[in-house]
Length: 167
Ligand SMILES: Nc1nc2c(ncn2[C@@H]2O[C@H](COP(=O)(O)OP(=O)(O)OP(=O)(O)O)[C@@H](O)[C@H]2O)c(=O)[nH]1
Ligand SMILES: [Mg+2]
Image 1 (cartoon, rainbow, N blue to C red):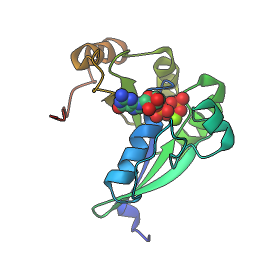
Image 2: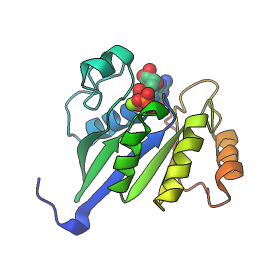
Image 3: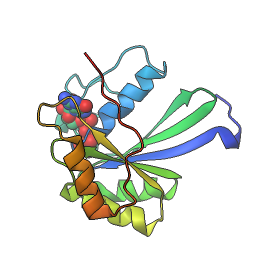
Image 4: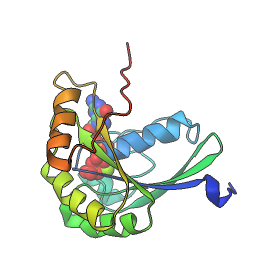
């Protein structure tokens, strides 16, 4: 896929371990038609977490680069580990990204991993969007999670999109 520079986006996915980064990216790949079936963490068949060690632990350990084509844009997507043991992978990915997508788990809100990652996002002055994820859980609370984000990260955290899938 050859794209003009103006049509390329470099996005890094960040968030506490288990917030759903790898699963979210797998869904992006599927919904954009890049892959014909959506893998899962439990089935050990996601595009991102492909190493034996990642299958064994069911966590991302290395940064992985993937590409999503959406309309006329090529989105370079970087998945990163949520565990701070592997923070070096986060730092190197932040350095080459234009935008950060910080995932918050709607059942647990701002977690310790989110706080650690936020320090790096600020240090690198990377524009960031929060995604309140895992909204299908019974205990998911969008408003409480947004409120936590505002309290912790400031009133610049405004809601720009809310989408609920009606079953
Ligand atoms: N119900 C539900 N489960 C989800 C969702 N997203 C992820 N999961 C599950 O949550 C667990 C963690 O998902 P991952 O995609 O591995 O999370 P991660 O942020 O990549 O985790 P690390 O790689 O450890 O940083 C897995 O068991 C997923 O199946 C979601 O939107 N809804
Ligand atoms: Mg992951």
